[in-house]
Image (cartoon, rainbow, N blue to C red; front, side):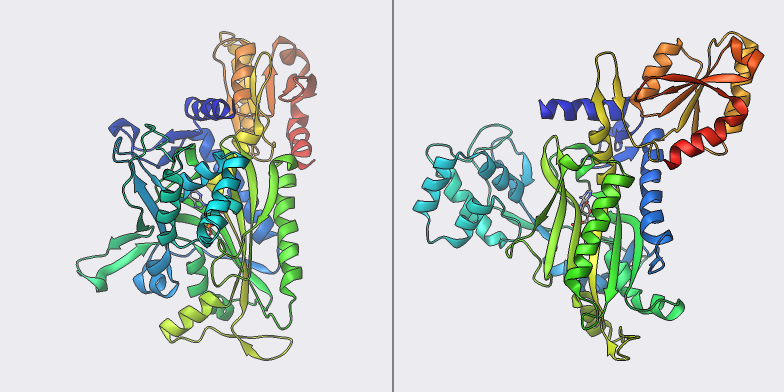
Length: 489
Ligand code: GAP
């Protein structure tokens, strides 16, 4: 049932111009997508809202836009070259390639309690295997242990671990592969000309920490935020733009002195800020959200605490937004590798310190998918995206009642010209009025304005509300303030 909903959302997203498969006319390119006219608007609105809340409205956070192509030494120092890896496995029978951690976790989730207990008692001494069974997670365990976990599960006579694609139990070994995309720059061959597409925007913040501190008036505690593309050579299991090889994220590194600022309190404040942004600004239903703390195995070795805000997607409860206390790990790594001083004076203690960071990081494109999923409603006679008006691709759609009546069309064009400088406005004169309403409902347009014969006499239009389908007459000259007020409420 839930999978079915996802299929419908994916189909609507393509049919109505939210999300298209990447490189489609050449047969497609796995795990890449393009955003159509309405998807582009939605993504832009999400990014703008993030920026407004986390940079514009915060005196303690400044913005940055660092480069996508970056020096290989950044990624060596950060640990990504050595450790930013996933495990992959192939089915020898059908040649399907998949992430080994996802395969194992999905399989463990499918086990009934009796089988799980039986496995636990048969493998008491196998620490990584029992951890995986107990937590349902293999993320964070050494990739070397995955092979052992797979073997134990594959040997389970009652329910062997078979390929989800073809049903065979015939696997290659599990191999590690690095997620970074190398790029060869200019004509210099070898290491000198080697760069990487950034695997996270965060490193751009760390390497510019001193530039920002020296060129602005920031004082600890403060944050640097940026939105930008990141690239990861991932194998993914479909699910639209949930996990792609190119995606946009919004990351903040919030720098503080742990001797002055209580990190646990700061961490809780960030949790509340994120929760409130997702529920009140993006309008997501609380019942679909939950925080989950990473266990010791899953958490990066340099992190003191990591929690994920998770969302109930139709394909499972999945990470939406990560919140990690990264300590002073990154700045220290870059300071050691670059031999440049990345310190700052704490204004309260006057001591020179390497600040610690708390990092909220979220995929903008993942937020977009969540917004579509959360807003998707099937009613008796229509499908409607109940997107928060703030995020809706079009705020208003303007229709002349009849397309073949010149006076109605020119009045509608006048109304379009009045509204479009203020709000993203659609104009539609195709088909009958009922179909135009349904068409706007499907892309989440909160209000439709119809110009009819009465308008020519009294200067009033019919405004129809997407969610209630109620209609009211409003004077044309009051439309701008009418919609402005609605968008502020
Ligand atoms: N700097 C921290 C960092 O990169 P992450 O959890 O790997 O952390 C941050 O990524 C966020 O980016 C995730 O919470 C998720 O929302 C999003 N994300 C991660 N990988 C993604 C992918 N392949 N496609 C789309 N979004 C992704």
